[in-house]
Structures are given as C-alpha cells and as structure tokens.
Image (cartoon, rainbow, N blue to C red; front, side, top):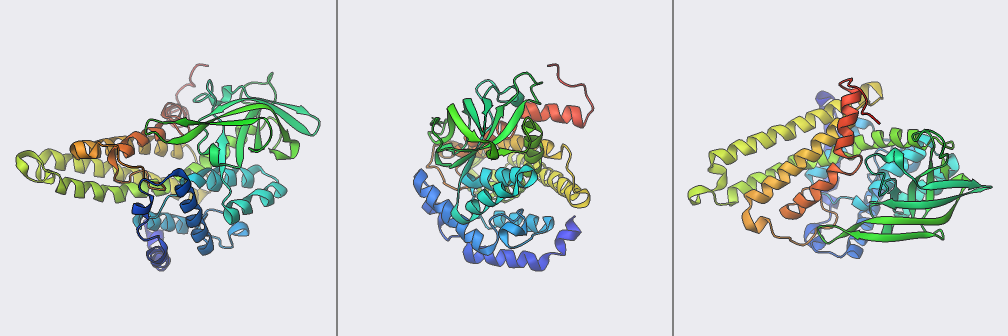
Length: 400
C-alpha cells in the first residue's frame, strides 16, 4: 500500500497546499478555554470551509459531495489534515460517519435525501442512542421498547452516554420491537427527531468538568414508521455492519495524530530538566521509553495500513477494526500518561480545555483524562477482546 500511496504524490501536494492556505491561523489559541457555544460556532465554520473544498466527508459518495475520493485519497487527506494540525470535527463525528453509514447501507432513498444534505449544507448534528444504564457493554440487552401502533412506534426507555445530544437535532436510536425474540433479533433501528414531545435530555458532567455526554429519557415518544431504518427487528445486524465499517475511517486520523504528537513528546523531553539538571532526553531511561512508545505508534500505523489494504483489495473488513481500536486506546493512555508524568507538576495542572482539539493536544492532564473515553466508546475494550478471541483466535464464545 505504501507504493500505491507514493503514486499519489501530486494529490498529496494539492491537499497539503490547501491545508497551508485554509487551516485557520491561530485556531488553537482561539479555542483554548473557549465556551461550548464558541466551539460549536467554530466547528460549524470549519465544516463549511471543508464542505466548500469537498473535504468535509471524503468517504461519502459523490452523489452527496460532488467529488468521489478513492480509499487511498482518503488516507492522504487524513494524513495531511493530521500533519497540518487541522481542527477536529468532534461534534460532527456521528453525523459524518455513523449516520451516513447507516443511511447508505440500510436507509431508503427518501431518508438519505432528507438527512444527508442537511448534515453537510446546514451543519445538522446527530447523536447516538444505543447504550443504556443496564446495557452498555452488553448492548443487545437494551430495554428501551418501541411498540408499533398504526403508522407510529411509541417508544419508552432511557439511553445514556449520548455524546453531544444537547446540541443534536436527530438521534440514531436502537429500541426493542419484539420482547419475545432472542435479544439480538428483536431490536429495530430508528431515526429520532429530538424535538419530538416526550424526549428529555440531561447533560452529564465528566471528570474534566465538561458536559459532553447526556442521558436521554423517552416517554411515549412517537416515531413515524418511515423513520425506521431497514426491516423491523433487523436493527442489531444493521448497527454492527455499519459500526465496524465506519470505525475503520474514524481511527485513521487519530492514528496519524499520534505520530505527530510523538514529536511534541520529543520536544517536551528536550525542554524538561532531567537528572542533574540536564535535558530529560539525555537520560538513558527516558530515551528507552521514547523508543518503546515510538515502536508502538509505528506498529499501530502498520495495523491501520493492513486494515486499509484489506479494504482496498477485497472490499471487506474482518475484526481488524476491533484490534486497532483496542490497541489505539491503550497506547493513547500510556502515551498521554507518560507525557503528563515527564512534564512534571506543570503538565499535571488542569489547563483550559481546547475546543475542536485532537485527542493528543499537548494539554497533557486533560489528554490523559480524556484518553479513558476511548476504552469505553465504540464498544468497550472488554467487548473488543471478546470479538478478537472469538473471530480471530477461534476461542469458545463467552458464556451467556
């Protein structure tokens, strides 16, 4: 795949030049300590800038973006955006990846035309209503009920950990439509308008004092039948197929950002006093730690390349995304913890939050605290280990 990427040198120069001209100058200073509202405005502006260049959603079909990018071109775009320190569209992650994946794979043409242009042209924000207080890791145990009554489903239940739900207009919702079916077969997939009567959204304050996640309380919420994605009781299959596919591209830019962040760590080691007052980077133990972390980051990118090569040559994807998600989340924790420790007390102060920043922003204590979200989101690491053990190693399924 490396040789195929090298053949795109002209395209890479084009994207690199665009980044140099359009990545907002001084955006890090502007977004450091920014309010939630200021961050939302900034991300909407950045989405519009990317949209104008056809770069907001390079993995989308040309029917919706006007430009069809190959998988390798998508890789180049993600690499150059990471290297240019471009802002992250965190509030649009569900909209651009999961909503698009669900609608393209299983939605109707009318659903696609109703919602996809609104994401790119109007900056419409989506959230996800999957996890529940008693059904997080074991998502198939969800209890939220959707009972069909004529042309609507009446939904009752509770969802939790819905990222940015307080800012979203729509929600991807899983609910049980057949309580008598085996738990994986009685779930349906819905598009929920969050302005529907009976929807209550309560933000959750996390350990960094931000309110990024929410609880959703659904009381006799009516969802039209034409807002169901796919057939009734097929929601589990749809959710799994779209999530695994979208996870592949979601992981590409963070993996490249880690390679960029390693240079930040090297500079930190050069500027931080070590034993005897010399720069920490001259210490043998620190240099060994740097080599170990660098090797892990290189291995991560090799795993990503292998997954992308599989997608490129076979069009399919196995459990590679679970392996990469597990590996990335644990490297991220080790990396940010090491940075916070190496930087001493100054690096462990709770500095102002960087809105739209990458997962490794250089605000080391916040980066370390935030790294734990990756071990939980998109399927906990425990669930990923189950997938790997069963689908890769051929081990017996976990007892139910």
